[in-house]
Image 1 (spheres, one colour):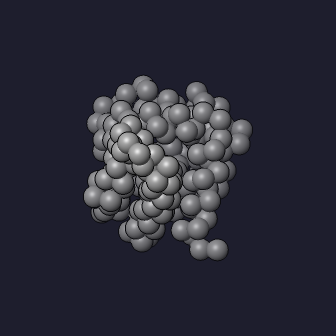
Image 2 (image 1 turned 90 degrees about the vertical axis):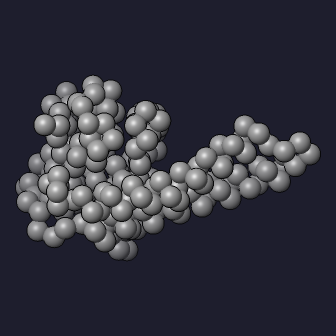
Length: 184
């Protein structure tokens, strides 16, 4: 299994944990944030890829956000439109099309993560294994702050929820303080 597969499995596992879906959807709705990028940032920190610098990760984040805007968001918008406005007399076919769009959206998110991994810079400073959650917190903060330039307590709380679900034995209050450090 390669890193893109491991990342995708991590994202699916964490997303399924209690409270994470709601936290992710809140960030997505409020800030237009790509959840697949956020989970990739968390995973990369936990896996020892290091702590992002604001400038050295710019290309990976920008390319991911372009993919999200140009591919994922239109798929999501179409899927949502069909849910709210199915054509009369074609409800069953529309429901099937929505399922196909969900699968296409998930595949597009997986591709977004692959692009992110391709663009990760080498040699970033990494914390020792027991402290890699700190890199994950920082990386998540760097990704979120592109869409949320001020340190919004709701964004910090959502990131803390995601990290606590991704890491065993993490206290949410400790994570909150670490996440806040990503904002200047």
